[in-house]
Image (tube, rainbow, N blue to C red; front, top):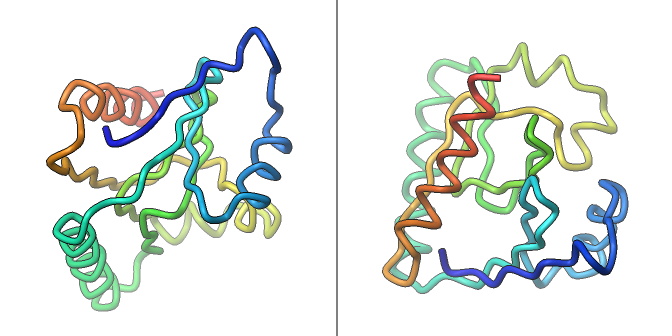
Length: 144
């Protein structure tokens, strides 16, 4: 994964609210957080990867516009997973009924819901192992 991981465990235990505020105060950066509390700084993608990501998100939007059964999210949306991790898939979709079960505050912050469908792109600078580990976390969240 084209990212930097910082282990803050021995320095600070960041609450969900503190993590949200960190992200809001540093909007030029993209953060994720592992279930163990490690802070992941996602580095910008190159043009080819950004173009593929936009194309995939557009395809999901077109499909969703036809069936109107859910909500589509881009790569800048961070979700609070059941294992405690905060992750941002490249593209994702949530069933409308599940989305509507959230409060307005939950929708506004990092939604505490795991998407029904996620896509992770593997860009040339990404580590296959790190991407597979991230997908493993998605699988674990899905089957909890």
